[in-house]
Image: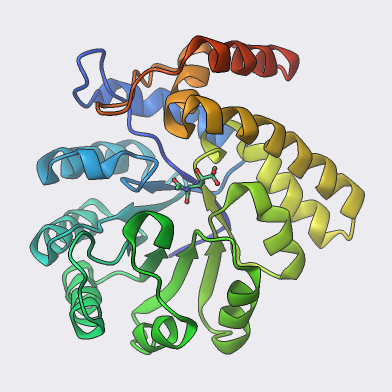
Length: 292
Ligand code: MN9
C-alpha cells in the first residue's frame, strides 16, 4: 500500500570504481528517513537507472527492499527501453515486497500510443502491484497529453502519475479529471506551486538531502501558512540554483559524501562538479547546517 505523500527519488550508491555499492544503501536510507520523508522511489532518473544494466537495477531493488521493507513506502521504478526489461524488473519488485512500481514510457524510439499502452499493461500484469506512470517529457521525449494520460489510467491498476514538468495547468487538470488517482509532483523548484493548487504529494531528487523542507511545505500549505511555505521553497530553490551548476546528482552525491553518507560518485558520462560550483555548494551546506 502506498502510504504517505513525500517520497525521495533515491540516489544509487556507487563505489569509487563506479560499481553499485550495496553497503551504501543503509546509511542513505537512514539519513533520508531521518528527515521525515514517507518513502523511497528507487531506480529512477535520480538513481542513474538509465546508466545501469537490468541486473544491477534488480540488485539495488533487492538490497533496498531487504533493508527498508516495513520501514516506509517503497516504489520501484522499472521503466526501460524494452518491455522485457521493464517486466523483469517489475517481477523483482513484486518478489521483493515493494508497495508499487512506476515507469517512464519506453524511450529512445518514438513509439505510438498503442505501444505505450501495451507496455504499461505488461508492467501491471508482471508486477501485480499498483503502477504509477512517470511522466518526464524533458528527458524521455514523450509528452503525453492530458487525454492520453487519462486513457492510460483507465486501467484500475494504473493508480497515478509522477509528474515532472512545469505545467501546473495540466497538473491541476489531471487531478480534477481523475480524482480517484494520485498525482505526485516532481519538479522540486516549484513544489509549493503544486501544493498550493493541490497535489497528492511530491517525489524528487533533492528530497535525498532536504526532505524535511518538502514535508514542511506540505504541512505549511495544509495549515494555510503561505509565508512559511514560501520561506521553505526559497531555501530549496537557493540550493537547487547551485545544484543546476554542479549537476543535480553529482552535487547531491557530493553533499551526502561530505556529510559522511557514502554514496560515491555519479557514473560516467557524468563528471565531477567544477570547483567554482562546488565552492558555492560547500558554502550553502555549511551555512545551512548540512556539514555532517
Ligand atoms: O523528477 C527530478 N527531475 C530530474 C525528479 O531528474 C530531471 C527533479 O527532482 C529535479 O532533479 C529537481 C531539480 O531540478 O526538480
